[in-house]
Image (cartoon, rainbow, N blue to C red):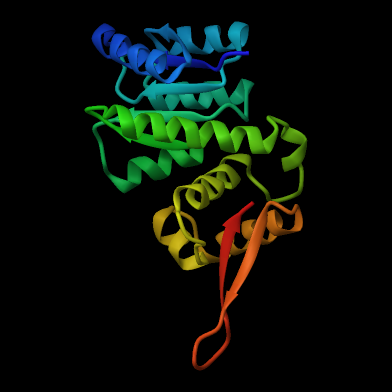
Length: 203
């Protein structure tokens, strides 16, 4: 079965470019020109991943993300934006977005991000029952998994925390949860003095 990517952007030229990128990577790209149309289309098609523009009239990317998450809490959402501000990323992550790609779009970077997020979704099995434990947010868990997947080497809690708008204590709690599920390996690194430093690797 082919992978379906829902492309949401009010700019026809950008939608065309993104569809060309999807075609090149072997994915089936479908289009929506508004946030509302994207929500309606996602209910009938159930895409494997959504590419969502931030700045759109009527329903912008943030409102569309929130509406999508009311209906579907597992399909990865990658936000397309020219805005690099951390506070924007924080708001989108809290709303349920999984990743960001800066405009102008670079095909190799976007393809890499799509593949990573598709892999995470596959590892999670698209099953919300995995996330029923108290205090575990699906979007936060996906963000931490995403961070681990992007790293070529095991990451410490501090390294993950510096990349994401998440507190040290929260990262530790989620990594402990992932380790209990057998999805993360803890690697202890011993220095010359003091306690060993734990690093984490996604299995």
